[in-house]
Length: 99
Image (cartoon, rainbow, N blue to C red; front, top):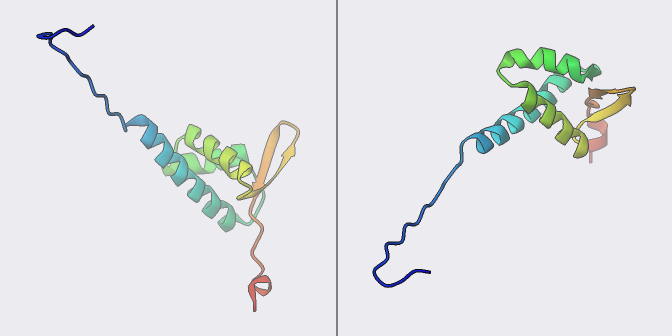
């Protein structure tokens, strides 16, 4: 209970650090993965994607989260082969977009 004459302290916390950084890293990873798959034009396992992209400065966790979101959002094609996922991007047929 606060009474007249009591000192009231209010603490306000603001944190945008690690959570925001992880979101940005994941979003960057998603774009990088899509560009990578479009460029390779071949099916790749998650292990291959990790090995090829980790050298580009994107962390393993960001790549794994990005792959999961890309799968769940149907932004890339994938199939499950036993315990592993195989990913690719279908080429866009220019004739499909013709008027």
